Length: 65
Image 1: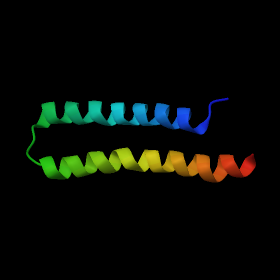
Image 2 (image 1 turned 120 degrees about the vertical axis):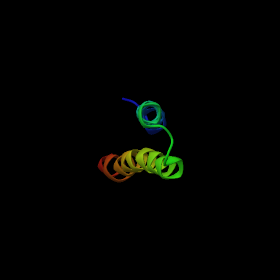
Image 3 (image 1 turned 180 degrees about the horizontal axis):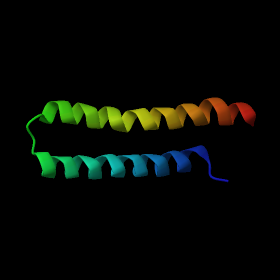
Image 4 (image 1 turned 45 degrees about the vertical axis):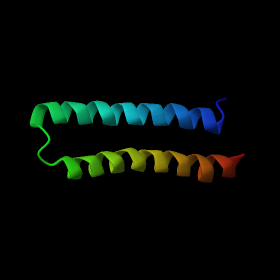
């Protein structure tokens, strides 16, 4: 069984990779006309899944142990 820290690092790596790949693709395709809005959306798109993952593991998995 994977401990919380290892799982968290793996999930963060996957999420950041997916968001960055999508971001670079969209910048290449559409340019950087709306750069500040795009950066904010990328940060939000990264933080939401990380927060959900951490919340799930701290609330549900710790409660069931």
